[in-house]
Length: 164
Image 1: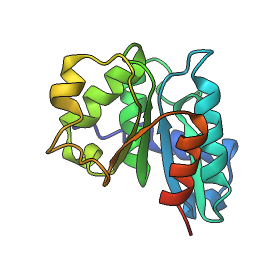
Image 2: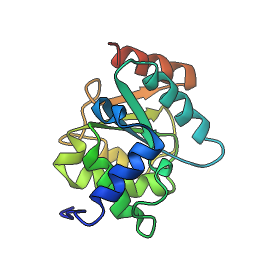
Image 3: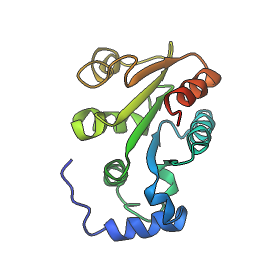
C-alpha cells in the first residue's frame, strides 16, 4: 500500500506519546493483531503482557489509537504496520477484521517480512489461508509461522521467541 500518511504522521506520533510515552518510541514495537471479539481478545491481552514483560519491547493493539485514521481502518492498519518493528498475528478463527489484515500483510513484502503468525491448531480455516496465505513465500513453519494448542502453549512459545 503506497500511502504516505504525511498529513497524519505528526498526529499519530502525538497520539502514540499520549497513549504510551516518548521513551516507548525507542523500544522494539510489536503490533499485535487478531480477533477483538469477546472470546478471543483476552488471548491478545495475555500476548501483550508477555511481550511487555521484556525490558525494551512494547506490544500494542490498533484499538489503542483512537484519533489517527479513525475514519479509515485500512489506512490506520497501514500506518501502524509501517511504524512497527514487527507484526504479530494470532489466528483463532477465520472471520472478521483480522482476515482483512492478513490480506494486507500477504499483499506486501514490507509487511509479511516482519510478521510472525500464530495459528490455533485445528481451527476452521479457509482454503485461501491453508493453500495460500500461510505458505511460502509469505511464511515458513518454525521461522515465522507457528501452531499452538492452547493459550498456555501460545504464551510459552512467545516467551521463548522473544527472550532477551
